Amino acid sequence: MGNRRRAPERGRTKPAVIGGLIAVVVGGAGLGGYALFGGGAAADASPAKKSVKSGPLSAAEVKSTATAFLTAWQSGDVKTAASVTNDASGAAPLLTGYGKEAYVKDVTLTAKKRSGDAVPFSVKGTVTYKTLTEPLAYESELTVVRRAKDGKPLVDWHSAVVHPDLEDGDKLVTGEAGTPPVKALDRDGGELTTAKYPSLGTVLDGLREKFGKKAGGKAGVELRVVRAGSEDAKGTKGSKESEDAAKKAASDKNPDKTLLELSKGTPGTVRTTLSPDLQATAEEQVAAKSKASAVIIRPSTGEILAVANSGHGFNTAFQGSLAPGSTMKVITASLLIDKGLASANKEHPCPKYSTYGGWKFQNDDKFEIKGGTFKASFARSCNTAFISQAKDLDDDDLTKQAQQVFGLGMDNWAIGVPTFDGSVPVQSQAQMAASLIGQGGVRMNPLNMASVVATAKTGTFHQPYLVSPTVDNRTLAKASRSLSASTQSQLKELLQYTAAAGTAAEAMAGLGPDFGAKTGSAEVDGQKKPNGWFTAWKGDLAAAGVVQQGGHGGETAGPIVAALLKAGS
Image (tube, rainbow, N blue to C red; front, side, top):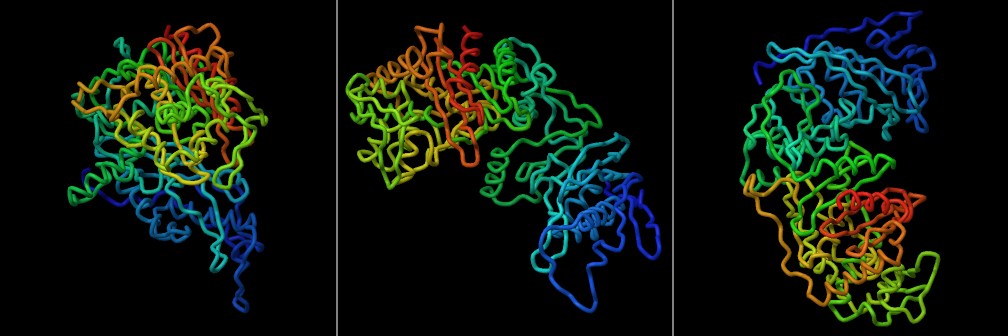
């Protein structure tokens, strides 16, 4: 990365002496009136009596601590800046690297109006690497906390203080990019851009990380976030095992992120399976909700046709880890049918309540179905119809069904960008029972649940993928067994009946007869409304969506999924 040199100490503001007291202003506008007058932090210290101060921070303490930190950082005094934080050993390397690895010079930090113990601030500087120079500007924030042992106010240290895109353990680096840029294409050859499809930012970052070098591009010079554990973040080489662990850790996180281009690289080209029309529909549908995500795939092949999130900072659709609620009953129903504990058209209990492992479970609005079939219970989303069967199951039965039939929870999907592949841990007692209805420790995302309903439709798991495995000769995950013909037939019947006459009927109206669906609502601690889930198929299309804090899935996620299925028909 060339010769490294210490950042020049520019922009240091001289303190003004006012009646024997010192006032500091950072970066011109600075902390606008953050003067350390008699009631400030300096006045709290008494040589005659030392006591540990406790309780809420005063405005003066917050202001003076923020001033001290920002002034030291701006002037290049890393040691002092780090000492004003509650993790000096963690702060010092990142603050040092800001000048020596990120090559950010001439830094001006301007504090804004505090909000409680938080102080937002703007950052302006110049990134200079060899003969290349580009201005840098962004917003960040720090929070002041009181140290318990002596009551001293300090900046609560996290890497995000330096830049909001940093996670703890990440760092900022300027130099030749670790991976060349890529030009990502849809299935028809059109270019995929965030200008056209705003929620594809994380997907495009992932494609670059995975295929940048393989696609034949040439790297440019960039300021970028290098994630902890990534190739560029590693120092000296260790053992093969530690190197593999580092790669695995990197793949489990978001990919490295470009913050500023100093010179453009030459992109390689990678074609995806995304449909331009379905991607546009997905973007439009999730944009109407504050926290919505959706995926549509082709069951016969596993091709991903569209993915969208209304929040663009994290790919919940691929990497989310959320309780799926009653959409999990697709997997549980297949298990009960396999074990002879349920049959689509045989009578099945659906009482108001069912107790297992010391927990009392109930149905929505405490309904019951007297003398009804398992199909009626599934279509109405009767919780107790599933909880009542827990006594006849082993603790690992649901885990095995999810892994062996639906390909979930083994962390081996290779779709072309990072994913979370679902989790169905082995649990016991009440938690095992809760897992049967998609609560407990079960975690999924829309990609997982679209795959689940696709497996129900075809009978065999086809791992979803965004880039054809022929591009890089990667091996797609497989399940060890398919659904039996009898179980698949009954499972499809359950899903078809739910779409035609059950909780999914309103959303799926007009899409039949080759269709099936399941609704879900997942309770989350601290949320007033549950997350609403919906998963469905129509013909050779399968889709799933979630609206966080949305309420019932049929009313919130259902219309999103139905719109995707209609658009693809």
